[in-house]
Length: 257
Image 1 (cartoon, rainbow, N blue to C red):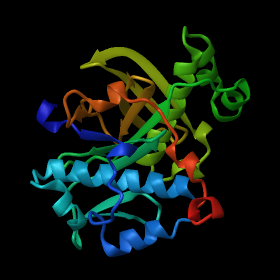
Image 2 (image 1 turned 180 degrees about the vertical axis):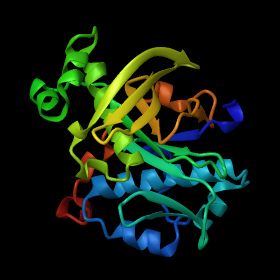
Image 3 (image 1 turned 135 degrees about the vertical axis):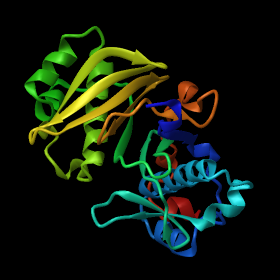
């Protein structure tokens, strides 16, 4: 594996998303406008803005905003995101994640035969009940046997979500059916991990601390760590926020005043 084989990723914050819909297709704009809750609507807009820009960067398109409406992010029947260039499936795969007004999209190299998943979590306290309910015994020992339980709890949860995206099930599947294992190997600021399923599949991946966040990546086969499309990576200095709380319900009396 060489750097030319690395998956690529782009990170963006909520403040970058335009208020207009010129970068969306008409069906995309109508669908997003139909969401009644500001949280879901704003996160969906952020995710698509980030994914479209990631794809535009990979395709070396100039004038991003003017060409973004030709990049369509659709959800397959199982919910996984798929990229279309107009009505033609793109020759690469993506994974999307968002958390606390920040989003990341990972894009594989063109023609790469690999399924990918990524996830972003804020490093924050998780209760013992949460860890007990959603983690395996080995993972519980990992979280409370280390020096930073908050980091490890969110890392394990994030890694599980990344692997479940590779499996194209998301949280419809029991999170204890996949188990996270961490290794000391490090490359370019990323740390190696594996997620093992109860069926015997192994999803190799990488994780890193990015400012207030932990960012994980998993794949259906070994890859080198994802490479940032932006230098410096804005995620490293990103601050979590929750802008949707100012307008929780679209069209509520408070927002019509």
